[in-house]
Every structure is written in C-alpha cells, then in structure tokens.
Image (tube, rainbow, N blue to C red):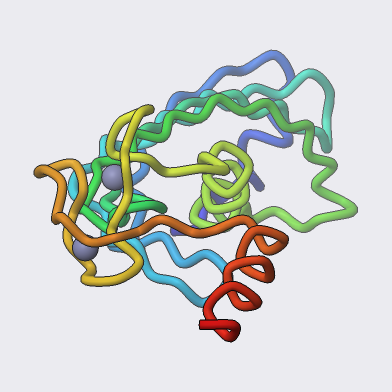
Length: 158
Ligand SMILES: [Zn+2]
Ligand SMILES: [Zn+2]
C-alpha cells in the first residue's frame, strides 16, 4: 500500500497517524515462502520537520509459520519491527511504499535459526523419525574414521 506524502511534506510542524494493512500474506526469503498466520495493522506516525521532509516512525508485528531447522515441525515465528525513516520528498518522491518498507524491516528481524525448542534433537538420519518423540532405536553410531580403518584391517584378516 502506498502512503501519500505530498500533503504532509508541505505542512511543517504537522503530525499525522496512519494505520496501514500489510498486504502480503507470506514472507518470502531467498525463495522460501513462510505463510503469515496473523498480523496487526502497521502504525505510521508521519510528521513534517521542515518543508519537503517527512519523518516516519512506526511499528508492526506479525506471526509467520516456518519449519524447525532441525526436525521440520511447524513453528510460529513472531516478528516485531520498529522503524524510523527520514524521507526527502524531492529525492524519493511523494509516495512511500509501506509494504516495501515493512518487508525490509521483517527481513532484518527474521531469526537466523528457527528451532521448535532450544534442545530440539532433530530427526534420525537413518529412518527420519522425530527424535523429540523418543528414540527410534536405529544404530546411529558413527565410528571415528581412524577406528574404522583399524576395524577394516581386523575384518579383512578374518
Ligand atoms: Zn525441532
Ligand atoms: Zn532412526
């Protein structure tokens, strides 16, 4: 959604508050799509410190869903952003793309790691069971490579 700044940018000393709905229904990050489960209206406080300039301050929060990095269980990812921007209307034009501004802020706050819980055990490399739900009983012992070489010699000499 576009916020028109032409009026406020000429009204020195004036304040204006706008509630804006964030339009996308998913967060797309490097080709991956994370659906947005809920979102609040973004609040934009606009003011004009001097003619031609607009000071923008606001906040926004949403909840998206994304798979746990280790076990792929769906996790709710809350993201809240606060932003401050100074806009020179002569340089950038008198329209502010709210969705674009919010998307950039969401990207900055998106967690590096998404885990269903800090101590998530992940999934078994052999059978794919979710190890948080109990041991699957697979033999996941990975021998030390030096040890494996000794075992090979031992097995070959039999
Ligand atoms: Zn997990
Ligand atoms: Zn297993």
